[in-house]
Structures are given as structure tokens and as C-alpha cells.
Image (cartoon, rainbow, N blue to C red):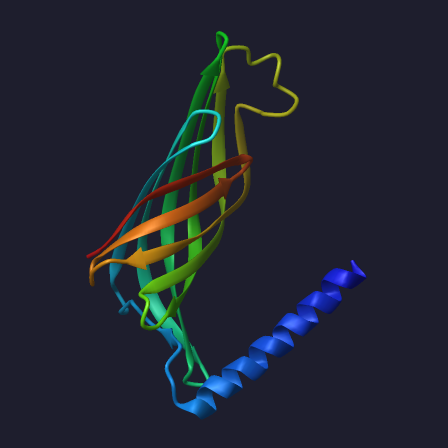
Length: 181
């Protein structure tokens, strides 16, 4: 615990000093790729135990600009994730959905956007043998939701995404596309 706290303090100090350095140099390192009221649509597909799918609709609500150097775009979104798999006659299906608060930090000149989302959502679980996993997975649960990833914009309104999402106890990853409307 003490090592984690020291690492966090050192990271925050590094961040504060690096923002100050960029502010004084006049070079633009961080950039905003969004406008207030803009809608974004995310769709991913992946593979873990089986196929995973994720979809999200987001509306950008505003921007915080730290020292006129680091713009952080923020918005609200709704995310749905799905996973299904089958091995040796046993199958499981997960479905999760959550409203989320999302933040974006863009990197200038390379059209990269990092994002993270937090919220509370629900997960639905089904298996071919519900009695076996009943103590670990209830058929319906409400829990913490999070998502993070990186977007590489190939054009002004289209990008590729590498994404991880967790809702309740359902977690998935995927690659896909982002459309800005």
C-alpha cells in the first residue's frame, strides 16, 4: 500500500511539472478532438472465451482545460456489452448495460485519443447449468462499470478503437470503429 501511495504521489508530481513545461514551451502536446453536443458511436468485437461485442453512444457535454495546455473532454454515454461461449456442451451468456461518465485526453499530431469511463450498471447471466455457478454469478446483478481504451482517428469523423469494458462482473475487450456524428 505504501509503495502504491509513493508511486501515485511521484506520478502526480511528474504530471504537474510536465504540464508546466509544455505550457512554457508553447508546443502543443495535448489536443481536443470533440465539440460540445457532439455524438460518438463506438462498436467493437473481440474474443476471450467466446465472442464479445460492445456498443456505446456518447454525447460530449464539455471540456476542462488544465492551464490552457491539457484539454479534457467529458461526456455521458450508455454502453452495452455481450459475451457468449460454449465448451464441451457447457455454455454461458452475459449481457451488461450501464450509463457512464466519460473523459477523453487527446494527443496532438498523431490523432490519438485516450478515454476512460465510469458508471453503475447491471449484468444478466445465463448458463446451461445455472446451479453450478449460482454462488458466483447471480442471474441479475447491479455493480460497478468501467471502460477504457485508445482511439486512433484515421479521418475527422472515423477512427479505430482498442477497448476494454467491465460491467457488474462481465468484462470484455475488443477492437472496432468509432464514428463522430
